[in-house]
Image 1 (cartoon, one colour):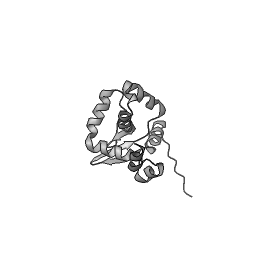
Image 2 (tube, one colour):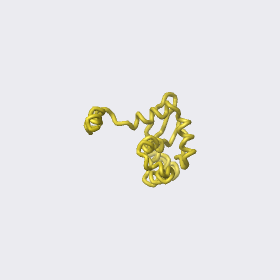
Image 3 (tube, helix red, strand yellow):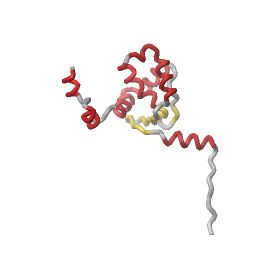
Image 4 (cartoon, helix red, strand yellow):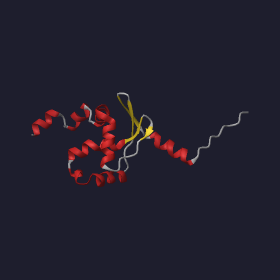
Length: 126
């Protein structure tokens, strides 16, 4: 008769494993980004951090995906808490990283057609 094997994880290991299970991976050239949706409190903090810029919809659409980044090359990436940290992250990602991130978050053609938000529909509205 075989003896069952029991594996006991420390609470910190359990927390890290649970957190890692929610991470999506995006490849940007040679850069690998780990993404996870920020929780509600973090989203409120983003609005507070950017101040009056939060009224600018284009600006917010450009920066919100950056707050999903939790890893770069498997190394933890803390969420920016100041505009300087946000700009440093943008600089670190460069064109390839930003493009891959925005492509990941952009609606797919089928989704746009289903929603009626394709370019042709937008031209008709205007």
